[in-house]
Amino acid sequence: MTDFYAQARELFAYTQAMRRDFHMHPELGFQEIRTAGIVAKELQKIGLEVTTGVGKTGVVALLEGSQPGPTLLLRADMDALPIVEQTGADYASQNKGVMHACGHDGHTAILLTVARMLDSARDQFPGTIKLVFQPAEEGQGGAESMIADGVLDNPKVDVTFGLHLWNEQPVGWLGIAEGSTMAGAEMFTIKVTGKGGHGAMPHTTIDPVLAGAHIVAALQSVVSRNVAPLDSAVVSVTQFHGGDAFNVIPQTVELGGTIRTFRLEVRDIILKRVEEIASKTAESLGCNAEFVNTRLTPAVINDSDTIRIVQSAAKKVLPLLTMDASSPITMGSEDFAYMMEKIPGCFVFVGSANADRGLNYSHHHPKFDVDEQALSYAAALMAQSAIEILNSK
Ligand SMILES: [Zn+2]
Ligand SMILES: [Zn+2]
Image (cartoon, rainbow, N blue to C red; front, top):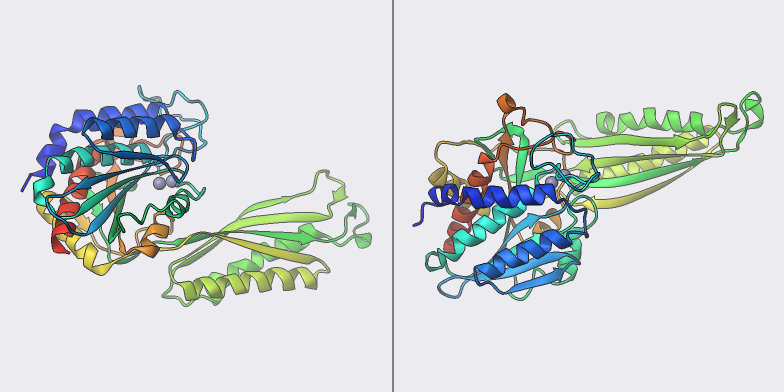
């Protein structure tokens, strides 16, 4: 079998050039026109038939193995974030106000590298590899829009696999965990309505600022008193908007925030309690509260059989790396969960931080950057896993 780590190192100049090019030219979700164009061209260069415009700006290509067999979906996300880059790198963003601050430039370059490696290893696996370059991961519904466009059909996908570069851990670390890996995410708003009036005559008003403040405080009891201590959950109020003048009590205030959970039962309890606390606290202070929740992503739950194959693939191809199988990895979320909810599979993490070189800022930080050695590790892990998953089915 091919030594995929050795091959990934040989292809490193290619991977790095691709990653830096995407990094210099970042595009926001559903605007990945240039990126998708380069991806399509690179895949066509190795002779693959490419479909563009899947889920608006997504790209899909098929790579057939030596004989018929199952279909494995490999996914990379392509979108950047609305952040002004402050890394000062030679390859810093040339698109001011837009930045690859989550590592999706790396993911796209990794999957292009994997496509090259698997193309020259077609005799080593049965079935089909579906290469999926997804738009708009950062909260805009890219995975759902690709699913709506049929990315999981024709041929029907049997297993899914994705990965994330992970700056919360050093390069050389791999997070390959069974079960709950990333949390499901909700986005909520609470609109509190009272009766506005003069700041010096509060008795003539019904103050929604006061009610909103009580609601924020009371919501802290949900995780501490309604969720079982062995379950993990987050309720964060991250927005509190209201009022325009120092001497005017406003008519309304609006709170916003996010809920993170792993289990649906926990999610249901939290949604119920947040709504009750908001409406009853508001009511006790004479106001009225309207709670609206939007589900962003389900939790990422790794399939046990697939994760064991990936763990064994990691030991073979990257024996010197540290493998961490503790779950969950993070309360962060990932829209690949929508694909995994339909077709079981796994999502793994590849450590990419290097503190000595100052490459250890968190995801979404304006100085976020990765140790590019992680790109080769990730490409080797993905290629080896793909071959072993397809041969095990
Ligand atoms: Zn992100
Ligand atoms: Zn991300």
